[in-house]
Length: 386
Image 1 (tube, helix red, strand yellow):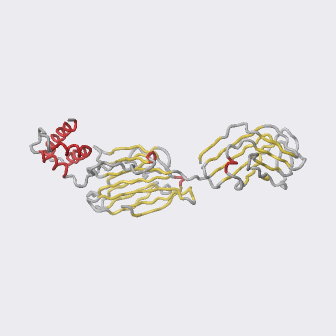
Image 2: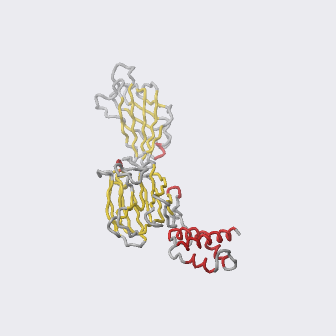
Image 3: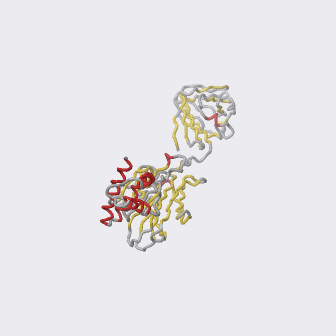
């Protein structure tokens, strides 16, 4: 009976709208019927519906929508990771009541935006869709992200302006024209990704109906890749946008080396004379990690002065990755009998695979002479993402 009541109400509304000849209102009613379509057809032929003179009238009304989907589908439905995809407009053509409708998304380094847009017979500059870091969709672009991606009708009928962010341009955007056939639907998509061999560079590719139409690159440092990203849909013509989606992808780490192990050691200032110029070795005392690494050049004359912090970079590519996890104790061995008095160690582990930098801090006054000395970890490691 609930379905029947909906049919009666919708049919009566449809009668009134049809009498007034409102095409926009008719399209709205057609869309509202979409979800009840099957149930209505199951009941209309056996039910006497008040307010409708002919039962077939309702079926004729529903069946006149030739290009409207029988089922509303979600543009993100086929993505395995739904958290990374946002549907702005589904397969049901959409028309804001007035002006524009805004959906707030999150900017990202790597993303894809796609929308189906009806090519309108309009000879003026008008937005269709607009992605922007600016709350005002009509603001003149002055910052990266103000025109992240836009499809705009132009005074040249049958042509769209494609506008996207370009941090190197004076107005932080670049634009080009894309022809379209009036009255036809086309798919406009932009995909932006970090370049594998140089993650500090972003490559963009614009596709028209699945075919690459333009591409380029710009530097990540100036890109709008974090913060709110507003997706606007405009009331250009009734129901001219559908399947508008935005998907983000994982970042590529910006770290330059696969694995870098850096040690900073401070020689205690409580001693009045220079420390050893002999060789100092470093070891991670864990099973399978017992390789010794040389920390210095023994011929360097200003090595390990009192109060001085020296930095050593070690190639640890020969060690299993597990050696660099949960570092724990470290071991220092001074080969000569001159002695060394370090009072602080900072060990930084950079792992490009995990895109992390982990810093361990060790403190204490320990004399390192001919033999071994262990420094126990006495501060929780600080992990940062890059």
